[in-house]
Length: 204
Image 1 (tube, helix red, strand yellow):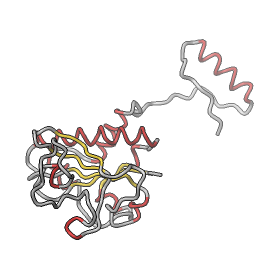
Image 2 (image 1 turned 90 degrees about the vertical axis):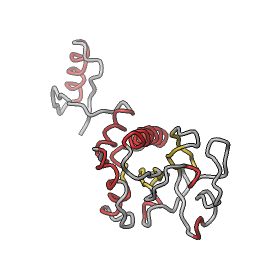
Image 3 (image 1 turned 60 degrees about the horizontal axis):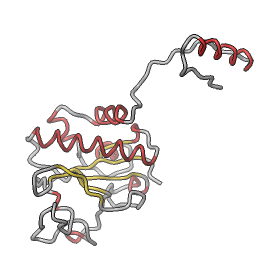
Image 4 (image 1 turned 180 degrees about the vertical axis):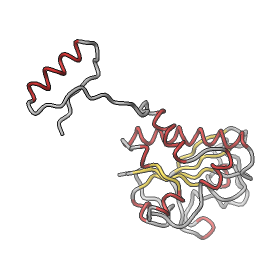
């Protein structure tokens, strides 16, 4: 059962999905080298993520899922393999702001979808470099080496995912604290009569 999401980027100047996903479905384009990752031991390595974000042959940006979301992937080089859904964003030369903004937006939308599907807290979205600091992934720099060049951070991504889920941060107002539940319910009724329909009683 997924407990979080780990965001990766490929570390190579090739934004085309066909480099990592195959076979060609008519939208990807053909990988003439046959070295895509959607096969056993790509390039002789044991690696696999749940999805890739990148460019189709027509230039549009898309997400391709390469594993069932609830399968264990080999992506983190650590215990996050057991707990995190993973996806790779196909890097270009890291300078194209149009491409970056398009794949960043796609990444936010994918995270919103996954958080909704599995009931995940956006606070449990990390990139590979954060995973290393948490002791759940190997020592990689992605994705901050790329995001910061375009004025983005993982905190910003998590905030945008919160917004996408309709869970933006709120200021809360407490109107009372009571030892007797009868008194708490009485205050709740008064507050609701005053028009605050979202009021509730919380027992701590």
